[in-house]
Length: 434
Image (cartoon, rainbow, N blue to C red; front, side):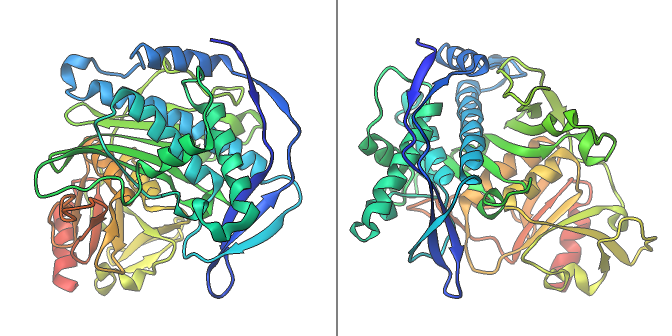
């Protein structure tokens, strides 16, 4: 396998939401010069390990029925995180030209690129397992997109080609578009029978991804078998280490101590490893894994509560019983709860609870249905870390409620994610006041 990989980046783009009508804007960044990209040693080792089915997991295959699937998923998500970091660096440089497109959502080159990349990686090893994912290529194929659509496909294709493990054959634009559509709404049709499928959120927290700062975003991939999540991976390139989070180290070197990969398998626990080494380079697959647990808080008013940045405390039924504060230094009595509003997607909050940095995440469902990819991988990670996930009635999330598409879930009221110890107490309070 050659170490030199020629990559042509004709343009760099970003789609952002804007305007009163929430039209989607395409930010076109100037073309980059032709460059020769030397594949990093870590990438080569990851590629060799993945090809041999040797991506190092922290538990033996004898204990995990879906060990091979999880290993492939972890390798794919790690590659996807690299793609995100590379794309974000290029998107945040240069002069910007704005093209507007009609849409209700915010999408970046990385959203499409991650979906194409993970689709290609999974199809090579598991061609019979369908993929349920957020994006499709309809907007990219639109004849109304003028020239900007072609340039966007060029940028997506370059990002995928730079990170895909199989470099033996040249990826065409059609290959990339077809890979995206493998997870689109028309790619698979289910019925009431049990099924095995992947669920992917290419970037959960795209608004955070498009920002200059270190706002959290997650690449999330899960395997569902017969209506149950059995394995999952979350990659979060901006996740701060405990040293940074606790403000114990403000040195220049500490800025590289970011990035986390969390894996979970039914009955094997949740585990994490760093994405970067001390030099800011992505680590290899053989790095140390650490077992991950939720926190042990058992007192309702002493717990740490996490809310979505677009929801207020008075939208949550607990507000009938408790006041809230965001001031951690402020003395609190048993009638006041400590809350934090995190600007990021839902999976970032699942990750925060599974890692033990928050005790509870409460989400109100503003519509009857929620998207499955915003929650599926979070469920297995929180559960394997010792936590619990239900709707506001205390019922498990029904991943098969959407019989044909498996794209929607219908939680009653909202979703309650806790460290497990507090779950029954809080579920009763929510039911009593909802």
